[in-house]
Amino acid sequence: MKKYRIIFHIDLNAFYASCEEAEDPKLKNHPIGIAKNSDRGILTTANYEARKYGVTSAMNVYEAKKRCPHIKIVPPNFTLYEEKSRLFFEYLETITEKLEPASIDEGYLDVTEDLQGLHPLELAEKIQAHLLKEYQLPASIGIAPNPFLAKMASDMKKPLGITVLRKRDVKEKLWPLPIENMHGIGKKTVPDLKLIGIHTIKDLANYENHHTLSRFLGNQTNAFFDKAWGNDSRLVDPTRAETIHSIGNSKTYEGFLHDYESAVKALDQLTQTVIKRLHKHERASKTITVQVRFNDFTQHSKNFSLEYHTSDFDIIFELVEDLFDQLFEEKPIHLLGVSAGNLAKEETLFKQLNIFEAKESMPKEEQLDKILESINANYPKNLLKKGFKK
Figure 1 (cartoon, rainbow, N blue to C red):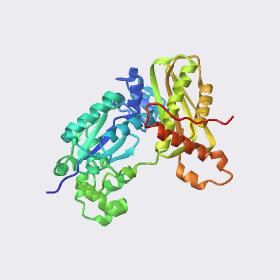
Figure 2: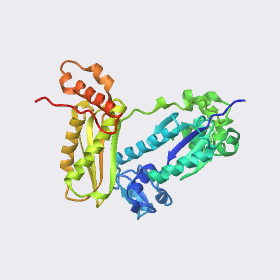
Figure 3: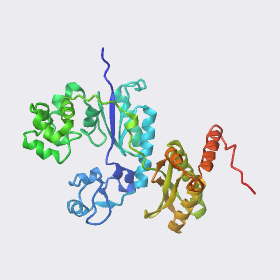
Figure 4: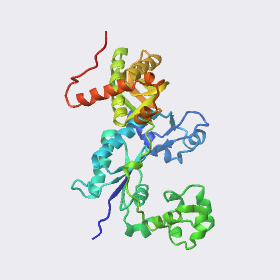
């Protein structure tokens, strides 16, 4: 008997807005949009309170304010979003190794062999509840025998929905949907498909002239036709994950940090975590960013780009301190963040080294750091430390 795969698609709802609400609970139950606060700014997302007024992502701020005069426009905080995304995927990795990130706020899981003795619905409920309780991130989950149907299912009920979409449900639940709702069909393609009479997914599934279809869908024609019938042979592939563009760490301090020394100690811990993650992913960074949010919720960030890539703690932390000095104010600190961007694979960098770059990039120093780190990781306290020549 054929065993069907059990695929989850997990989609964080209004992700950027949810992150801001998690950081500032005063924003909850109030319409907000994420954008630069100018009339020409474009919303990257809007929370569900704002959507009740017809506010949508990609809408300009001027139009959003017309539709919802009391909307609060919040400037984007990408360091925060990257940190929440990291927590999201690190949690999903505890569910199964068969995890494929699709973007910063969504991913596919193949849980066929990793149900933990639970019914798929029970596992989905467990995941959804954990994300909401631990990270204040609402999620919708689609459950299906393949990635396409799982993606379509997660879109059917938002926010906080769990939807099962089986192949036997395709004609009833999938076919009535407008063609623009089909995952993978671009906005520019929709008018062309409607011109040839394809208004719903059912119309595509029953369209007989594939030669005409190929004029608009190209070499994906057969794939889209199969998906309209609920077929998708693609496997969840963890190696298909997007290239890592940055690695960050931020922390909110509920009791606030009240002096410079406490803030520097906190930055030391944040930077150590960033360095460990750089080493874990075998990356080196060229651009360092420090973010500070004060108790009045004003926030500032500064970055600096080195002339070379590095994952050396001493170099990066010296830069972190310098950037923080430029941001510091005599105000209680609510949040600190450190981010390493402009990344490159260390292996590639070492291969490209030449005699003129060797001194600047200091590979031996960084390799020593990694050896010490790997040894100390096996003990509760750091047993080994670098010595210094007198």
